[in-house]
Image (tube, rainbow, N blue to C red; front, side):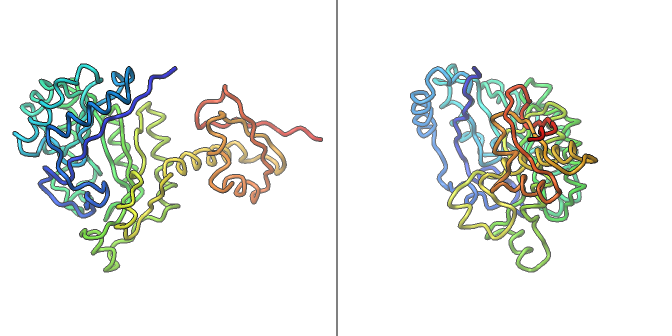
Length: 335
């Protein structure tokens, strides 16, 4: 049985960010404004160990929410030092930061405190898109930081956003291709959500920015997921975490609390349509892994309805030998 993995997340909203990106209202996204202290870290980890028990060794302490390596150095060190009495019980420490806030000196420091994974908020590999969204770094910065992180032996994570201001499905797909070339261990994909009190929100209300629809975002991200899967790169998050604060402060954009499931459902529909292409209309069975039955059915049976409209009467059969998100087809026997 696979051991349970659950990051123990500590949020540091806004802290350390030298730029205010067009899309960023992080306090509304996370619902967090309080800056944790070293004592908060200790209390959180003590509670987590009681909950995780022996599974803690498969989990990471995760500092998210800001650009960790850009925050005040003494504050950063106080947070890392607070993990010292607990670190032997965990797999390591995961931090997120900006590509232009990585160098050999900071990586040496992180290594000393047993940081294991470094995630870069790259967002796009198009310099035009990065500039349009006030990111303050370049695609070259992403490549340089990724190489250094790899050279120092850290696990590399890359985060991208789809549907940014001035981006296109083609530029987002190219970002995924360039991510693959960097060989990250993990990827996170976030469709752009328009939040109140952001420059992107102003652009949206002025009619200068059109966010992706949910359908457009699902169609694109499902293709990106397939690209990463084919390269054996783990996508560990798709879409923003559900929160009341996010719902209250969202102006527009393809938000859905089960966004990843919608994308995986689309992957299975596309696969079924590929298998059925050129076949006579009629009744067929589709075999799927038991864990994927609901994804093949689709939200409110949308996939089955779509296939029905195309003339295919589908019966879903569960088969444990079928790989996750894959589909196998057979002619349904005549009655």
